[in-house]
Length: 281
Image (cartoon, rainbow, N blue to C red; front, side, top):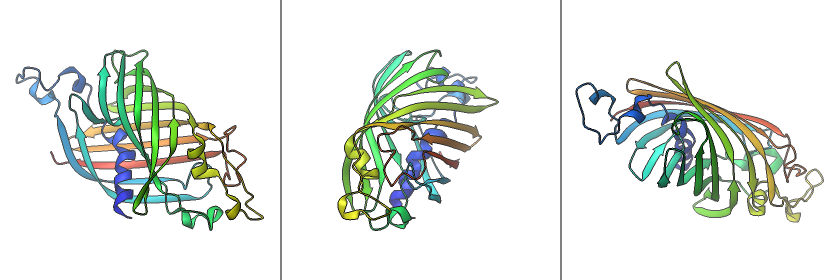
């Protein structure tokens, strides 16, 4: 597996692995006066380590062909005043309060060697993507963003990475509701949300140009609009110098703008992954 795939594995797992913190992490900031009783609970500004990540999922949403990866991954958490890597990925905090925050965030999606996908035989290769853009988080029920219900409203530009180039492939909106709580020292997160995307983004995955059309794969032009919905469940835990995290995500494409594309084999798919981290510092 090449380096770019390993880095993208990190982005996929960092939101789960980074959230393996105790409830005291929010109670005592690092800048607070330190006493003997509180020093053990003081939050570190940054952590670094190494681990292994495994992920299994469809080649792309709507594909019936699955791929599986296992790779070593670096681990880095930074809890700065304005830049943070945490359960919501990498983000720059522009404005924050207990009830809402506005930030810049980053995410990623792993696409395997699509030239090996039988349905896309002879078509341009798909590459993994990186997403970046503003997001508004609204706290609905908890005392802070670590517990209870919240609304997450990201708008992200999407860039394909691989093959030595980076190409802009459109924008993606993924409004979602999230619930967070602690269960027997495990941090639990549930998310449900819908997707809307530009025509360029849908073209990237689901358009079949005339030059690539066959008798079994007719030409199709994908438009902007509704892109399906998903539910995800994630759990993570810190055990001494170790972190463990896993997630499961279900995707549903019924009613999506591109549902009739010949590249959509199924409207239901499940993906999952596991990360084991050793924190060195």
